[in-house]
Length: 355
Image (cartoon, rainbow, N blue to C red):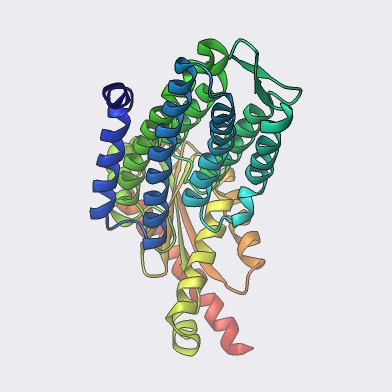
């Protein structure tokens, strides 16, 4: 039994161990996220043991009551694991994300006695009840929420969409493969989720090296990389500078200043499109790189930014430069955009003084 347990779960154990070791040395994630990931690792390990125990008892024959309890745990824990992933990876996610999974867990417990979701036939095989597909529906529901939340908080670049798509593929396989492989899929569920989560974690760490910690926008180094790799496609630059940040810091404190910067960053992200890359290049200075855009597209982008920012208590100065043929040097474009932005800022402060 022990030998078989090791063989069936060794790959999962190795990946979980590597995951835990990497977490112990990461400096890019906050303590709460790291603790939640540790809890998730432990949950996946325990779950793999319970799945093994269920199928071991099935081969042994009998033990119907114990198998029903283990089935209830398996059907309950699967959506709980995905809910926990959402709770860990999606910022500001409330504990209420667990409510549907908890309701399913209650129904699973009831099913042990009623067979409403699952049961064991006289031959000792699994049989579905009237609500037999509810656990799969719940997994699908949570998978959609997870992908939506990850896309929502991403910069919508290919390098960020790819790991999300990979994670999505892993969870879709969790919905499809049980009908292809039957109950045997449960034996590889844990390692499937572990691999998907580990790969996403690696991509996440790589992405965090490119991002500004406060705002989640791309950082200055990413700007240098982006403008050197695909300079020919860049035909517009928009520069943004927050108005009055020093006053906010002096009067309300630097925490309020951080909130102001994060709010402005959120406005920029919501206003941008998939063709735009948003950077925080330092302090209260932001920059948007536009690729294959018309001048009308750039002007509409600025209008959307102004509209978003007007809904907050903050304001910003904006300037842009446009190269119709994309041949203008990046530094020259940035210089022209800065000149327009500083002119806009000067007008803002002159009006404020007059008032």
